[in-house]
Length: 313
Image (cartoon, one colour):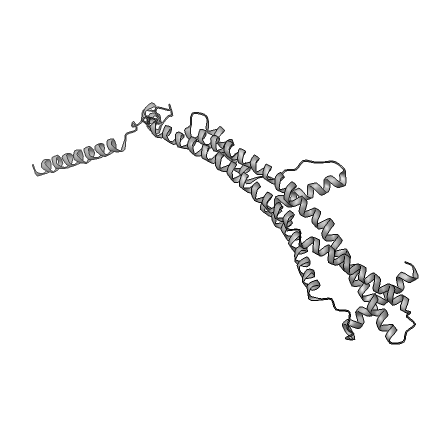
């Protein structure tokens, strides 16, 4: 840095500290300028926040966003471009329905209905990708350009204005105290201060009076959302009609009687069949066992009665 530049930086730092710590009065700008500064600061915050929230709206899953950002960063470092698309929720749900609908088989009306809904959700996911591309190109990109060019330039002029104001006030203050500061130096600092003041005012004015372009971008955003929802509504309208037809088809299908198979039907050997083969007591049902039990009790009672009669005789 040249000596003159270093001296200028020292003057600005000296004036800044004097104003903050020593209570020195700096040159005050009018309320209109201060209001423009306030609105410009709000615009800077707005553009930053609006970009972040719009991306969250289009891609609400933070884990997926972080993964995509990581892949993008690795691709830049490696120099290899890798395609990495955001997994739309509609597409994820569609894959689930399509997978299990096909596994159930074509003879199931429910399975066919799952496939129909999965296909519709796939279409909605594609429409969502189109919305993402539209909003990124026609809304987010202009905001990024505004942030990196216009706002950056305005903030540069404001920063330069602050520095030149400090330099101007420092030279005035030192000249008033009898320092060897010439009128030419003060006049030169004043001219630069006036130049930066004009550039900062014009830049902020152009930024704040750009409503037509900025509102047009909001219109584009809203139109994109409207088109997205209209297309999704059309897809869902057709889907509901198809699903209603599937429901009527399922209701009209005659139900076949179902008779559960027994172990014998399945040629499975039971305990009873094994005992019969070994010469043991055949397997009986619970009702058969109950009847045999009653018969055994009756026979026992008869035998007991006969035995008692013989003893009496």
